[in-house]
Image (cartoon, rainbow, N blue to C red; front, side):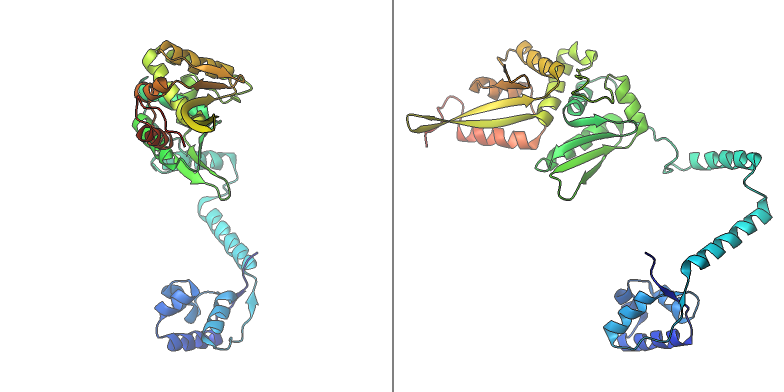
Length: 337
């Protein structure tokens, strides 16, 4: 709903000069009203209409009575101004509604926008990287918590993993010379990284990802990753950092409490579970599968080696693992509590 505007006149000028004298300067009035000193002077000189709310604010703040005023139809004034501008434009350049005029206008707009690197109408370029372990890790992140749309890519990360969003942003810049926007919606415990680059979406699809539902389509890792041991390891790292977890189990045995660390990867895409499982097996691990959606590592020496061999770039996982190692050094039995 638009605010009520009044026509500036002698009474409003007198009111404003009283307000200025009461406060000492246009700058102080500017802070009270939230408009610039220049705008206040324009109101005082009767060069523009005045929002009634601004005058009421001054009246209440300074205890000065409102001047006599006459409300004006601001929408009607804007429509009339727009009409006059349109008629003047036609008089100068002719009717823009003809086919010839529209073609000329479109071509002129394309030329103008193409010269503007910040234009929202011109597709932005990205750096096209070579296949690498970093690119494979980025693919793993997308397969874990990402969604590839028609024109955007969105990655959702838990609210307690803000440090990891920074890592993903830096990784994106290294690969594509582009940083996503990082947002957090009120009331939702999640960060979203939004990649608004059509060129990036096109490239990601070209290297093997799709915009279909990952679970319904049972998404798999691209073949160029599966056929390379180093790429497979990096992709597993991206999958673990997004859909994986490091946890500590507690077991009560004969009234004594024992602690055992574990690693879990959870996903509802069977091909991704198989890829994660067999990549670990190929690297000498002994994972287990549970409930058709989880891959576990539970051997203490393998969990420690996982962080040395596969690694992690998620500060949350690294912090939990470091706390566990510091509390239970290698070769020592976890203390009973």
